[in-house]
Length: 181
Image 1 (cartoon, rainbow, N blue to C red):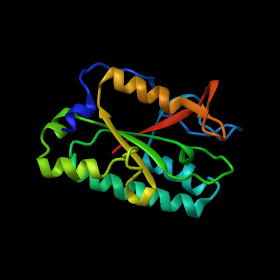
Image 2 (cartoon, rainbow, N blue to C red):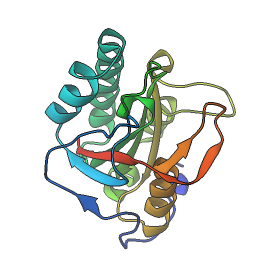
Image 3 (cartoon, one colour):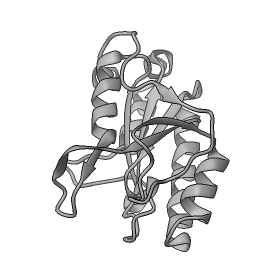
């Protein structure tokens, strides 16, 4: 059951959300460290319209919106989406996909029928099978809203800076986005 993926607990964890305020990337192409509140208009403006590889990013953004619409049907309470990865940068190389973790509410997960649970699972990244939703354009995960342990894990993961070989750069940190969905 998906509930086993979510863990247990209800306290807050991870970085405090910064904002609202204008979002900007630094000379490195990254957001400043931390979790930054954003609107979907902010995401589109800064990471599609004003970013390198605009046409490619437009495709990624459309895929993300399509994926979120399908998840909204299955998990109607909504919540927040944490966005990360190359999409949330202005690096010179084009992003491969959009990384997203949905912070979902227990009530949505507990209300899933067995069929809907299968549908939700099919819309998530499965590293063991090498599959990602939306033809690989979205790298998607879910976590329990308000679970301090899970939020800390995702905050730590999303804040890490990786070098060109995929190794974490010690002592380096970057920001990521939190958007209501």
